[in-house]
Amino acid sequence: MAPLKLAIVGGGPSAFYVASRLLSLLPESSSRASHLKIHMYDRLWAPYGLVRYGVAPDHPEVKNCTHKFAEAAADPRLRFFGNVNIGTPAPISHTLPLSLSALFPYYTHVLFSTGCTVPVLHPALPPSEFCVPALSLVHWYTQHPSRPAPPPLERISHVTVIGQGNVSLDVARMLLTPPSVLARYDVPQPVLDVLSRSNVQHVSIVGRRGPFQAAFTTKELRKMMNLPDASMVPLDPALLAAPENLTRQQSRTLQLLQKGSKNKPGTTKKTWSLDFFRSPTGLTTPTSASGSSRARLTLGHTMLDADSRAVPTGESSTLETDLVVTSLGHRSEPSAPFYDPALNHLRTVSGRVVNSDGRIVRNVYASGWAAMGARGVLASTMMDAYAVADTILQDHFPNENVHTTAISESEAEAGAAAAADTVEILPKEVDGDAIPPEVEAGWREGRVTDFEDWKAVDAEEVRRGEAMGKERERMVWEEAREFLARVRPRNA
Image 1: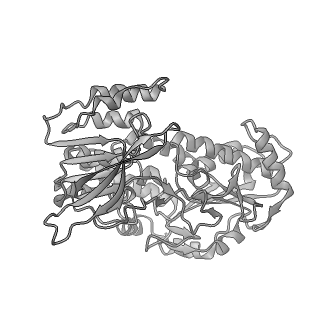
Image 2: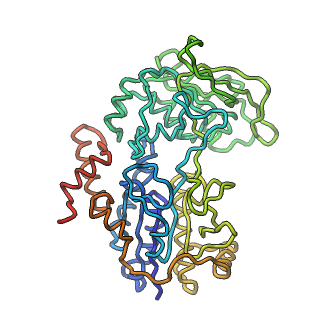
Image 3: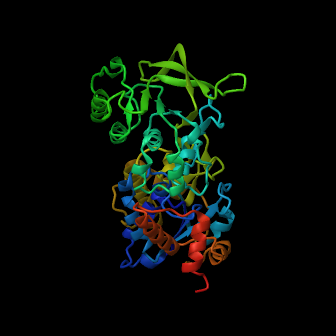
C-alpha cells in the first residue's frame, strides 16, 4: 500500500481539523494506520493560529476547540514543527526559513492551510501613524510574534473603525472595556499596561451600508451593548425602519439596536456609535499650520440601490479623529504558491490545488481561508477541513470507501479530472519519518519547536496566569525559548 505522508503548511484551526479528521478515519487500530504520517509546519512558534492570535481575549469559549487539536497532536503519527516559515517572505525575524524545494522531496502529499494573513487596505486610506489595519491592533493585544508597535492610546481620545464586521466590534470593545475587566482574561500584562493609560473616549464604527446589511453577529453586538463603562450614541429612528422579510439575525439585530445599550446615553464618560451609510473618501493628516492634532476623515454619504449595493449620494461630511482603524477583510499572501490575484486566495477545485494553467497539482491541497478566502467562522472552517480530508483519502484510496461524507456530482467530476489531467511535483515514495535537515538542525538548536514544547509553555503560561488571577500570562518568543532551554534541553 502506498504511503500517505502529508506536510501541512500552517498550524491553525483548518490544519488541525484536517489532521484530526485523517487520523480519525485511519485510526491506529486500522490496517492502514501505519501508512499515514502527518508533519505540520507553522511559522508561529506556538500552534493554533487565529485561535491564539486572533480570537478576542474576552471570548475564551471560542478557544475550546484546542482540546480537540491537542487530542490529535497526541497521536504519534502527527508531529508539529513551529517557528518554520515555508515558501513566502518571513514577516517574523526569528523564524527558520525553508523553501518549498527543500520541503517537497520529503512528502507524498502537501496541504496548504496558510489562511489569509494580509489585511485588505482601503484605497483612500494609506497606512500612516493616523491609519492602521485592525490586524495590527489584534496582533498587538494578542502578543503576536510579528510584534506590531502598541498604539499611543494615552494621546488618543477618538478612534474611527472602518468596517462593521466582528473584528471591528472586537477592536472597539477592547478599547472601551475597563482594563480591570480584561485583566481576568488572556490579555498580556504589557497590553493591560497600555490600556490602563488609554485616553480613548469614543469609538465610531463606520459602515457603507445600513444596519440590516452589517456583517457583525448578534452575539458581538450584544457584547457591545453590555459594555460596563460605555454607552451607544442613539441611532436615528429612520435607520431602523424594518424592510419586509427580515432574517432571524436581522430581527435580533433590530431589537438590540432599538433597545440600545445597557447604559443610557449621557450616563457614561465613554461612548461609541454605529455610523451607517458612510464610506471614506480621504484622510487629511494634521500639519503644524492646521492648528489641530487630529486627522480629518472625509466620509462620502451612501444609500442602497435596488441590489442593496452602497452607492454615493453626492453628499459628504468630515469627522475629526485621532486614529483610523481599517477592518475590511484579509487575503492570502500574494507571494504564496498557487495564489490567484483575482480570488485573493489559492486556486482550488474541491480542495485540490490548481496551477496557473488550470491543471490540478497531484496530491497538493488547500483548506480553510487559504482555499476559500477570509470568511466564515470556526464551524464552517471545520466542515471545509473535513471535506478536504475526505478528498485526500478519496484520491489516495480511489477504489475504497474510506470517506464518510457524501460526495456530490461536481466533486466526483473533480476527482475524475484529478486522475485524468494532473501535474506531478511530489515524489511517490519517501522516508516515512525523515524531515528536512534544516528543520532537524533548527529543532536541535532550540529554534524550532514541537508540540511537547508547546505543552510545557502552555502549562507554564496557565500557571503564571493563575498566580495573577487571570486565564494565562503569555510568553514572547525569547522568553519561551529561554524557558524551554531550561525545562526541555535538546541534549536530554
